[in-house]
Amino acid sequence: MAVVGLSANLQTSEGRARVSNHHDPGHTFPALFVKTVAVDLPQDFKLTDALAANGTAFFRNGEGMVGRGCVVKLRAIGPGRMQSLAQQWRQLVAGAHIEDPTSGIAHGLVAFGSFAFDDQSSYESTLTVPQQVLGLRDGRAWLTSIGIEDFDAPTTVDSDWFETPASEQSVLLTPGQVDETGFEQNVATAVSKIAANKLSKVVLARDLTASVPADFDPRPAIANLAKRYPSCWTYWVNGQFGASPELLVRVDHQRVSARVLAGTAGRGTDPEVDRAIAAALLGSPKNAHEHRLAVESLVNALEPFCEEIVADASPFSLALPNLWHLASDVQGIISQDSSVLDLAAALHPTAAVAGTPTDAAQLLISELEPFDRGGYAGPVGWIGADGDGEWAIALRGAYLADGKLTAFAGCGIVAGSVPADELAETDLKFKPILQALSGR
Image (tube, rainbow, N blue to C red; front, side, top):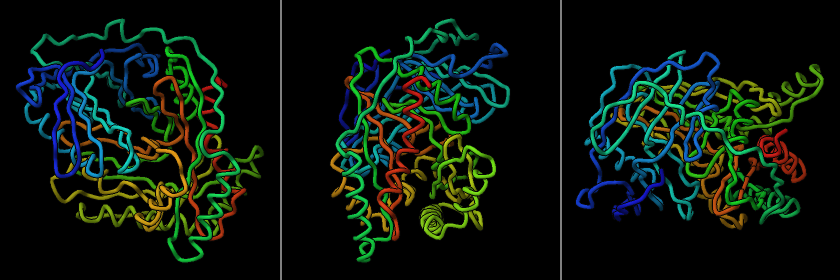
């Protein structure tokens, strides 16, 4: 169901915020009624079977949540968008009536969110509370229903959850505002800035675009991504969809975890060659330097929130179907009453998607990239009423709006980066969404 009704302007010191919902205009936030019940699902059920045309989703390895409809959409734009939405969420939760006899992470009131990469972006950051959320984790399924008036909670999953998506439509993406030559020129410029000690690292992207019919349905592409990249976080929020390999932050009962990916190589078709590629990636000084900058950036951002924090002593090779990544896991215990959104706001943008130092990297990005990244490389995920949640970085996907699909891919530029090699890396990173949209 589309969001209609009141759109009230909320002016805050952090940023411009707006809340849209179905409620009396005399109230800024509605008093939500939230009811969760355990449900039984067919043994062969997959969350991709329940993707709704007006839906949201966030899952990995077949576990997570899908939503349909919208009861409330919280919005913010500007430098303080994440802090603004974190505060709006606290206010919304404070007035909610939650009945949840089940137990487990992500039960009860939840919202799916997507945030703009850049402070100056015109892309509106949002938290969407669906009318219903269907979840699956550890072999247990649950259904959460949400409304602005009291209701009798459904106890079964109705057939509307299993509507048939439109037939698969093959889409051909072509170069957008930054073509291959332009990207190589941007990389060369960035390398010269790094050599002049203007910054240590910058992450540059290029874009691909396509016009699509007004009735274009992304669900077949989302299902393709989930099937091909099950270990990634499949997301569909606010027009953004994809399968991200990178977890920005997770909070589960004060335990915080994050994963850093920086350093990339293509997979080999021969097992012996593939192992050699992984070993070469681990031994690459250039990739090790890039990775270390990203880990240090994340740890420094998390430290003020944590009683203790531990990062892997050295990175490991993470295998995806088409790529090797250098990866490090970071874990800690939150020391204060902070939500996953508070942590995401402190972490974004990481060195893995912006660069080091952050301000200098973002300035160079704005100088070299003629496009608005929108939600690309921004946080995407969910938050619960208790502040727990999971947020990935919106990578390996596309943005659908106004009959246009836009996909981005980028890579970290450091001293010694070779423009042709960086261009080849973006080709590898475009591969998941290109395959998903072509049906291959």
